[in-house]
Length: 369
Image 1 (cartoon, one colour):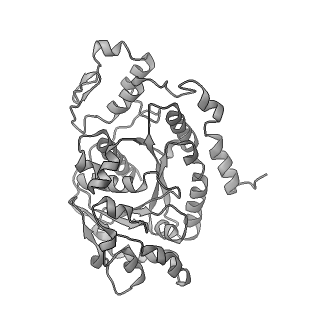
Image 2: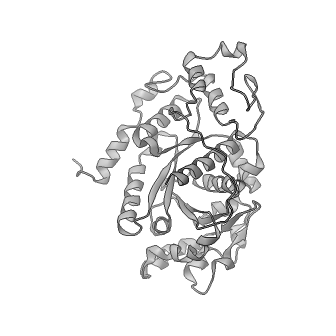
Image 3: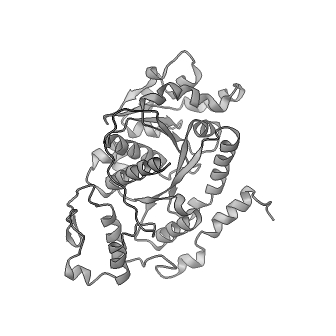
């Protein structure tokens, strides 16, 4: 039997919230989960076309007027399940909870000091880099100054912003290891006004070994970016998919953590270990560190599996789960090839709207702190 409060016990608590094999084999729905109908997909799309975004996209039920209360075409309304129509009127979001209002933020008269966010999950392929790029771009779109820090030796964040890591002479690795360099020597401008980048490449993988013998090795990144805090409103660190020394550096430098979580069965299983690491960093290195929230990503409303996993994530983490949910779309891989955020590549897409809503939710949470 695992010791009380141990990682194993926490893992069991999280696992208990996951759907069992028998649950997955059942019919669409389950307790609190809408049936797998076209209605749910329609409602998910409509969720992001709110009156702040001023979109007038042609969706299944006819043109959507963002300035009016939505009423579907009568013929289409006849195909709606009564509970789905009620959900729309009551503004229930994809997580199954009442949807708060996240207003469009006003301009700021001055910038800084920055809130530092670590985008972290030890599992790869869950949307960390995509979320870092697009949350940053959406915040910049709302007039905030944003710095993105590529803290993954794979350099995916740099590639996603059109930078070839192999052609870089200076990266965040040099900033960490060469004390005579300043951040200005490494900073790159992006195509998004107000959003800058500290790039990375494979050289960063050597830092994990070289930092082992350094004094205060866990605070190396914090010291490196400290001079930049007054110049930005948000600094977002894209962490590598591990819980090694680089990730601990990111957590030590950060004010808060966002955990992107893929809506798949196994994605939830490692989160207990991550939250335990966050708690240890909070207790031993960074008492200001908090968990900002769990961000559900790669959500496919058409599948029973995706809906059930999202429901269990909310069951396990409650209000720590962001109301914004990032769905699957072919646009995200396309933006990587294009080297730009979805907010510019496909500005009117549901994916762009989702990240704008996430930016508004992040700003609203900051105001509430």
